[in-house]
Length: 118
Length: 117
Image 1 (tube, rainbow over the protein chains, first blue to last red):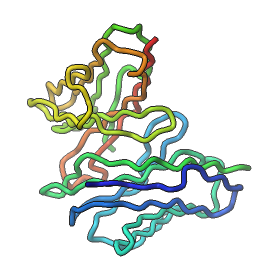
Image 2: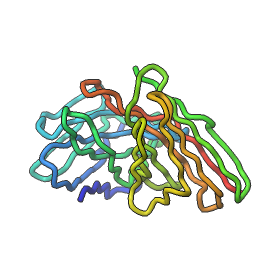
Image 3: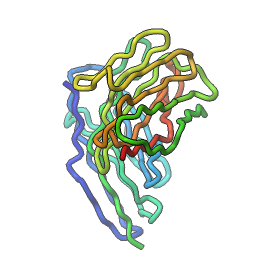
Image 4: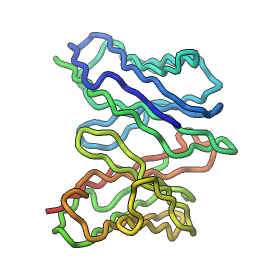
């Protein structure tokens, strides 16, 4: 069975603080994808990153960085120097990898509400 | 990038009526679309996988006779909530899968907020 756990339901930080959102996953698949999405109050999901299971390199994109560790089944997301505009719900998601590399249905975690105070 | 639209963005209907939600891929062909449901302050739960030209595959616990899915073309999938009740009030989001090799592979629509009174 596939499962994604985001143990932090809500996090509140002050602007310019760094914050890490945790994600732990479970899957029996040997090949899979991991995702992070941002959902602002408008509701639309904003894609942030996709990693495949055979690429454990950490990634940095501006103030965002991701730490993927298969040994602990974790895919954590760090925002450096947080800003008020980062306030949103963040979802971690897991997908099996189909033949040809296509994604399958996404299994979402319960989300973490991040509130960045000015 | 690929764009997915949903219509309507918001709908209010009376209990017992049916509501149709459209999901369109605007600039690509999607053989597979997914329908998700999100209750307030909760996660997204997959309802069904919609494949063009064939019957949808429903997740366990989702009533196929209540949530009718039709994927008649490569750019359009529809979700019809039949005989809606207040407990069906939710945020419905679709995603469309592009062919392998595309950077994102699944693009999400903006969602449809359904309120049943």
